[in-house]
Length: 289
Ligand SMILES: NC(=O)C1=CN([C@@H]2O[C@H](COP(=O)(O)OP(=O)(O)OC[C@H]3O[C@@H](n4cnc5c(N)ncnc54)[C@H](OP(=O)(O)O)[C@@H]3O)[C@@H](O)[C@H]2O)[C@@H](O)CC1
Ligand SMILES: Nc1ncnc2c1ncn2[C@@H]1O[C@H](COP(=O)(O)OP(=O)(O)O)[C@@H](O)[C@H]1O
Ligand SMILES: [Mg+2]
Image (tube, rainbow, N blue to C red; front, side, top):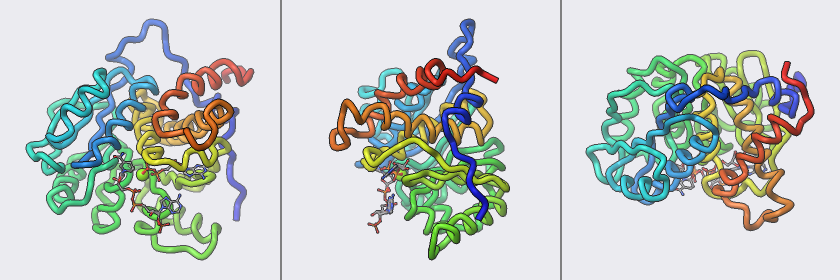
């Protein structure tokens, strides 16, 4: 098996873009995060807060009606659009053009949601971030995979990956199958775990940040928000995926000496995003190439 390209501070630094002094929220990108269902609005709440803390100018969450007050109260900076349905999404309808869309956290797999996801996919032209139940729905309806815009980023954890590509006997087989899948559908696969790997075309990357503190509910939902935010800020899909997993893992490395593993929760990732960005921007000592 070919050696991976390690996602380290050099790879992160060369991809990182400074925020310009004369920018404004309209230039910083608008991310749309679609998901949530009754009992799982937290997933999209976390994803949308992470998107804001990653620097995009505007964030809209599209959730079922039961999520409206939850998100408005917990994230006042986030705008909220609601579905006609109370408990799960049934019609992903919005009348603006976001710079990036992520779909899946907390979405559920109700039949009406699956149909709405199909109608949504048919209309998409720009790369998406696809996570959690949106991946599970694709695994149940593999013929829809061809509808994914090229260079969409799928972020499965190992169980979601298995639903998508089937089981594997060892790491080598996993990567071989993932690579064939990514090439077939012309997508980027973020294989979450410890360590997280990224598969894109002929390239295979492995992240060097992160630790077991990330094994906590909502950790992946936060990653989805981070990657969507970078995509909305005009990072290319592969740069958004690579920088996203590096920053996500770095928060845990920076936090654990202060929090310990046990008290680290998904909100702690968001809390440490600022320190992670400062590290990449200023503390690596690596000049911008
Ligand atoms: N606050 C909220 O609103 C939250 C909402 N959330 C939302 O819930 C929805 C369901 O998502 P989900 O991931 O919890 O369920 P699911 O896909 O069945 O996977 C679980 C199974 O997968 C496995 N597994 C997982 N990781 C693994 C690993 N690293 N390595 C190996 N195996 C691993 C493991 O299987 P086991 O080992 O038990 O066989 C485990 O039992 C989704 O929409 C999500 O966004 C959550 O984000 C939480 C916070
Ligand atoms: N032991 C570990 N070491 C490093 N990273 C981990 C570990 N366990 C989980 N993670 C990371 O935490 C995140 C978990 O994502 P996911 O399972 O989708 O969580 P959730 O659905 O609860 O948000 C992934 O980014 C994964 O790489
Ligand atoms: Mg998840």
